[in-house]
Length: 362
Image 1 (cartoon, rainbow, N blue to C red):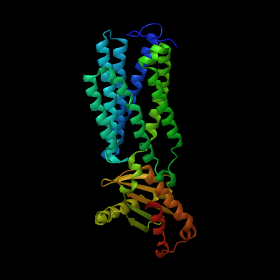
Image 2: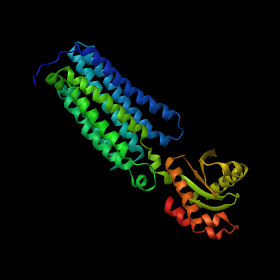
Image 3: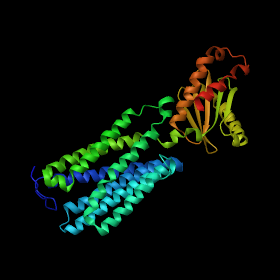
């Protein structure tokens, strides 16, 4: 290991490959930001958009950080301008992370209300002061970003991987968490290998290795964020209005209200839904897959069964609610299969369905 101070702008045999690869890193981050921006503008529910908006700021911050570092280290001769661009890049990264945390904590309390938002705001303010008073220490401050950010993510993932996902039938988080851990590790390791200290110790080859690690890490990180469920899926109980069970004959055999304060409005909506459903009963009877329709600003999820049709009226079409409705129908038909096959119209026999509903939805 020989310490040899590297000269900027970066040139030599590895200069051009490094430049190309690091522009690819910039565009990968930018592409992820655009993907989530498109997802946001295609959705109407503001709360559901918060998580996607958070991801936009996270990836946009990292994207422009890399652009500023690239300009400084590959195109600029002046050491003061290069240092200014580097500091500005780290500040952009930290600001993007701050907005990411702000939007996440705006919807969900992880430990205490806005705790991480306060911590990151303090870090950004301290970084700005150091930039003016002791610019040589800004690189040290920038490295405090990763430990605090990883701590936030531990609580973030823990909140997403709630008991609901283990008990109610949504897919396991194991593969997603593996993507995150491996991706985050490669990003931190790769970023560390691209620092000036590591280049001075090992040469430009170590920066090339760091860039490759980062590209793999970004891909894994992106896959994690694309697959991670919305907080709306966790708070499904706040989105549900009613659940109804209809016999294939068209007769309503069970209904349950979850928002008692809106019973009158819900009764009106249910009457309209029942009328519409009677008109399309033949189609629903022969339908094997789940249907979703929108009526009066509400989402109606219809799950056909062998003997019955389940209807769930809610605010959003959530995967969690689809799974719960399907489980509800399966349990009813498992318990009442003989009764439903030869049902004579007696509704009293279905009173115990309320216990099944309470077990699944409450």
